[in-house]
Length: 216
Length: 80
Image 1 (cartoon, each protein chain N blue to C red):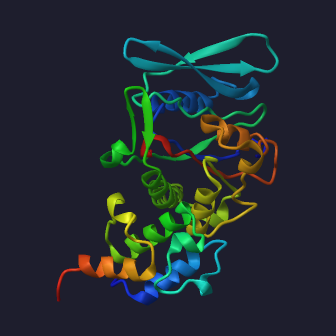
Image 2: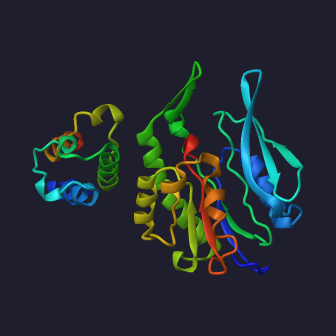
Image 3: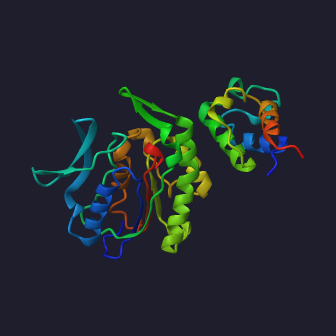
């Protein structure tokens, strides 16, 4: 990512934790939040009544203080995606695309505190919709994949990453992965992947896509 | 698109992963040949997309060879 003011970044954000992310990205866009010291967003949990509330905490690497961020209750009890992080880079979001497959909401259920997931539905959603969303996003931004330097996807599964890459006709290094070294770090996977490119001047335009839980 | 044996073979070739596609005969079990659940999921997804059909989860266990997949899809196609 370039350190110049005209750096651009495109983001695909899932719906879960959407309010939180919209707020954060809007602040990033306005420059009222300097994600400067923010390293990672760690979801912690507390339970109120029947709903789980996800409390994230922005960690500053130059201060001892931390700032908690509370997010709206998550219907599936999962943490929101983490915010973008950088120190000197100014991020500008050029387009946003959201998608969910509500008719398949039962692909992930929690009954009697037992979590159950239909892996095939999750795979089909990721393989089909993520590639389509990215194409739609690029259409909104008036760009093509050739004009994008980097595609950062949620590191949920090597197979899914390869599948999406095949459908988009892109591969490493434009479609990087750290899953072999980090595993699936859930809501932190994109920030951890992004951290390696924030000061890379060759990466001026990125597409970021988080997906999975809730088929979103 | 009408799903033919060739369509299934072409998709299998793309999705057989580490398994040697040329050694999988029409009647051979894909699972016994070594294809894992993700590879089979992607094979089914491609066939669903190509044929414009949906294969319910409960039908998947009965689809373990090219021949079974073809017969299943033919049974789902409306009569001419």
